[in-house]
Image (cartoon, rainbow, N blue to C red; front, side, top):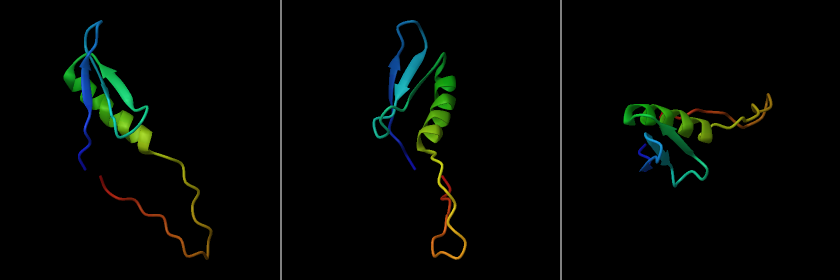
Length: 67
C-alpha cells in the first residue's frame, strides 16, 4: 500500500510530516531517516483500533491483512 505524505521543514530544524488521508496523523524527526521511521509508527498507531473478538459460535471472523 502506498500512502502520500506532505513533508515540511521545521523552523527549529528537522522535518515534520502529515498524512492527508488520515486526519490528525502527523509526526516529526530531526533527519529524514528519523522522520520516515516515525511516520511508519504514526500511521500504524492511527490505523490500529481495538476490536472485540467475535462471540464463540457466531458467523463473524476476525482476519488481519498483511501490509
